[in-house]
Image 1: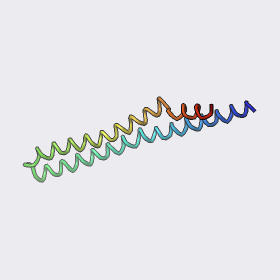
Image 2: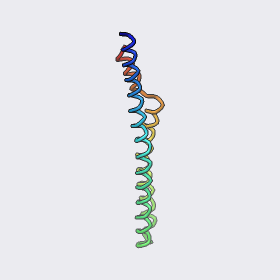
Image 3: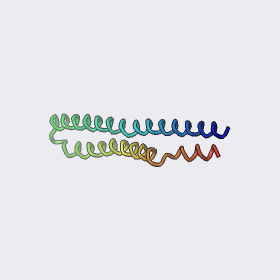
Image 4: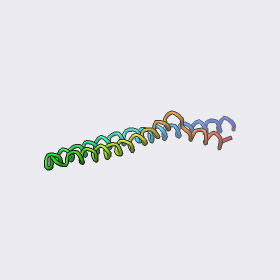
Length: 100
């Protein structure tokens, strides 16, 4: 009986670790890809705007850098949470405490 319980607990832990690894991989790769696409689109529209209206370059430059920082900030937060899940795994402690 105790052997079966240990086997079930081991399966639960393995499943939890694999789910966290998959979710963390998504949380690290997707924001990096989407942020790079977003910044590239922002840069291309900035260059188009400056080519159309060179006198507005100073205003557009400051706005572009603020928006690029916001786009990168969101991606960095998501990557940080994904890395925290990879290295700390808070759900494992909750599972072990629930199992006794």
